[in-house]
Image (cartoon, rainbow, N blue to C red; front, side, top):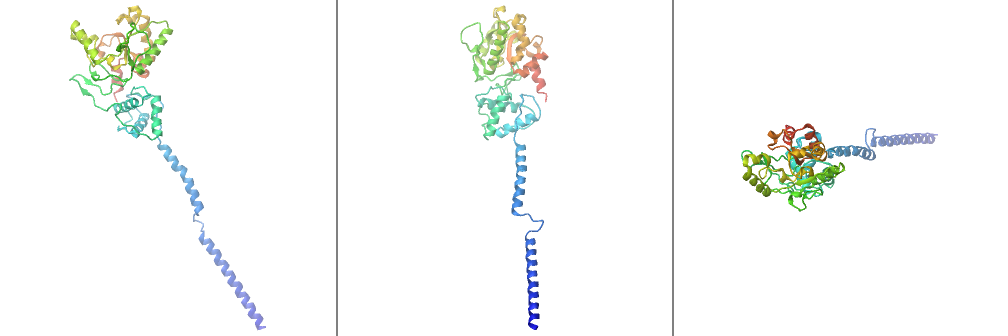
Length: 355
């Protein structure tokens, strides 16, 4: 009887010990994985979930270049984006939200160094594409290798020598002269009619102006007009000879009303062409403005980026007599506003730069 009691007690004791052991194991398991503890797998999942947010931040900081055409004097956030892109490429310019002279210089220099681009100083679609290509490849450029950054210098007390002669909106007049040694690097021979056959330097224009002239002449032909080109590029030295001849024959004061001193002639820019027609015997005379060709140019030249540079009634501003034959390339955007408003390049730029 005693042995049976002892056995019973031993069995009960063993059962109690076994229960205690199971309870202890269960508590340990819970302690190893408390409800607020993140496991390795959960932690990795959370980190994966966070990665797209980091990528999103990087994407927001990427430079998106403006899609519209921009030029000197324009303002806005688009200009700031363009300036940041130029800075990333290596240009040390100050971001200002304004398409200022530094931005014009940087774009001009970039266009000169990128051979396939027209050299204008204007930000256009081909320039945008070329900039994007460099940015995508994370390449930089050597600023000033195409066009050194220099300040305008005084030629005398009344005239400065402009620093960026390649800009199509550059102002060339009696107060703003081209450098004496400036010869455009992109001169070509436009395929248009001339009243002479010799391949003279004055048949040349800068490439962008030449292509615009060709298109304008082609469209004039469709209207049965007889436009002829007469005189385009003229070197500093050639202008010096011409002006001296006019002074000898007419005196300096009168000569300066219809001819420019060397350096002050738009012909040296390569952006100008004097045009005429058989109706005035191929001469450069004010009567040309009354011909069918002269009237058509007054109405349509701006569509091709040209203006009548010296309009009637603006002699006090331009410093020159009315010249309906003298076309100057400034780009379509500027040309349309200038011609529609009946203002001069001087007036246009003065308003543009009041920033």
